[in-house]
Amino acid sequence: MRKVRLGENGPLVGAVGLGCMSFGGIYGSTTREDSHATLKTALDLGVNHLDVANIYGAGVCEEVMGDFFRANGNRDQFVIATKGGIQTGPNRDFINTKAYLTACIDASLKRLGTDHVELYYIHRRDHRVPIEDVMETLIGFIEAGKIGAIGFSEIAPATLVQAAEIHPVAAVQSEYSLWTRLPELGMLRTCKSLGTSFVSFSPLGRGMLTDVELDPASFAADDFRKPNPRFTEPHFSSNVGSVRQLNAIARREGIPTATLALAWTFHRAEDSIAIPGTRSADHLTENAAAADFVLSSDLLDEIEDLLPFGWAEGSRYTEAQSRGVENSY
Image (cartoon, rainbow, N blue to C red; front, side, top):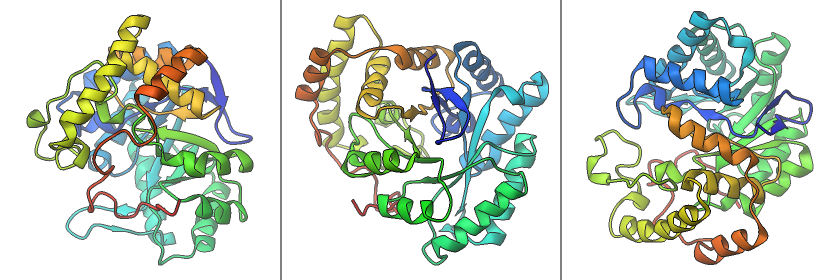
């Protein structure tokens, strides 16, 4: 698989990584055996960058990964990123204090069965804590050997600039795909200018930009997509109609829709990393193929004509889901 550097001076990772959120059953039931099979397939395919967070499955996702590393003795074959800074439960909040982030990283390392992770993200910014204080905490984690590099999730370009003035920021992850293109309004350019890697999460539109026909009626009550405006009517039916045009192009080209959609992100965001989530080894294989698939200019133009900027109906998040996201584009 084609490799890119994670951060200006960081390790080389496959352009396609693996989002491990689904290992906790968040998008449907799964087993540890299935998750471990997916991790094994990842190694076989050259997918060596794993992305997780302390809140995914209330820590279960990290535990599943830690069990895999302990059973196979292959922790050093992966570049791991995890996240902290969100307090879940009835008192949901974003907390970036030194004490809270220290508790987050220490608990994550224990679950993962490792003494360090290569990349640590602030999952959501807590604006009660100055960015200078947040960076001081993260730099302390680097000095203590707990993390290799600093990252932020769902921040605005201005926040990245402020943070990078204090210490290099290796990566920023934002939702980016054919149906969510906000990073094109400034974040992609800012990352490039600062030597920060851009990491696309949900690059397959939470399952929409694939060959699997979704049925929101079948979503579990706690499925993130259940209340999401893009998955509710009348928006969902309109979005499905648009995606079917992409499906038709992929069939004509003889490739899975997921491969085509991911390849598009790499064309639009040069040297970016995509972290589509899956608990299926077969789907991971489709995703990995995108790293080396080259889009012709004619094919790119055709996709842009059919699915132009802003084509998706419905807001990206509900009001509750959007809390903590910086949208100052």
